[in-house]
Amino acid sequence: MSTSGALTGEAIAAVDSTRQIGDVLGLGDHLRDALWRVESAGLEPHDSPGGLVVAGMGGSAIGGSLAAAVLGDRASRPIVVWRDYGLPDSTTPESTVLCCSYSGSTEETLAAYEAAGALGARRIVCTTGGALADQARREGVPVIPLPGGFQPRAAVGYGLVVTLEVAALAGISVHLRTEIDVAAEHARRLAAQWGPDAPEDSPAKSLARSLAHTVVQVGGAGLTAPIAYRWKTQVNENAGSPAFAATLPELDHNEIVGWEGAAGLGRFSAVMLDDCDLHPRVRQRIELTLSVIGESAVARHRVETVGTTRIERVVSLVLLGDLVSIYMAVLNGRDPSEIEPIRRLKLALAGG
Image 1: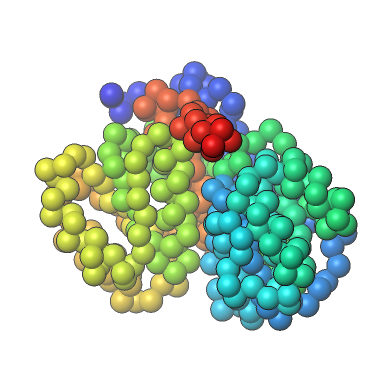
Image 2: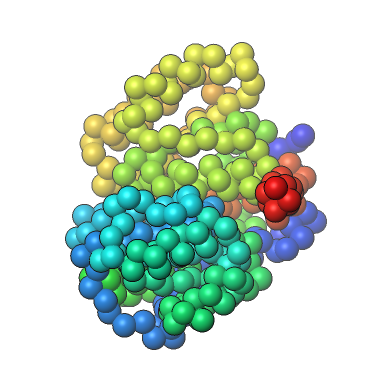
């Protein structure tokens, strides 16, 4: 399909049945609203020597990974993101377990909630409702209410802020409310620069055209490693395309060799997510890796974070990747809300 069509609001509206583009552009507002929602839940500080476990799947889990990257060495105790049934073996009764499920019906997260209760760990729930909210309220477990009407993956700002605030309440870090508020305004400015009303050669639109109809390989490191995974999953769900993520420097010890056969298999593209605070040798590796990949990729891009604080920089590339994936969906003529394979799998599991 052609990649030359205009990525205007009208073109997006023609395929985006649930107006997911508006949810993406609203990231800054989501960050501020999330602060209010955590405060309204009336959570009490509770020191957690065992650290924090964020239990969730898909778009409900990524906020935990991004929050851990934002905190970095400012986190005095472990933050573990758990995408599975049960809980990691390292969880203790002195841990706080944050159970995140946008729908409240994710079976893996419900299993983690029950496992945390059996262990005697402190539990906090983040959801719009469903069985998870019902069970938590029956058992007196605090619930942070999320707004309805989103695709779960579009609530990424809520997951990020909720995790940061719960980490602070658990004694793992300081509160970052001022930084979050500044990052919210940063996101609003970037949304104006990269959104549908931006010029057709703006960064998000240009990247989408370059990556459309290719298998995207996204690399990250340190702060950008979970963002690379976010880009991969957004391309999967929104654009309906295969995509993969890996981390530097590890990918230079294996994946880089696989690029030798890429041109004979299909159209592949490479994106490396850079950040000013990455180890100097890793930043050098990004440039050299793209050079070694060379013409095995139909497109190669080095994309840098934008901002001063760690949360500003994370938010910048989350927003950019989300917009790129929506624009890729438009170029594919695909509704970004369509996730039929997930629905079919859930029906099969329910019947089994």
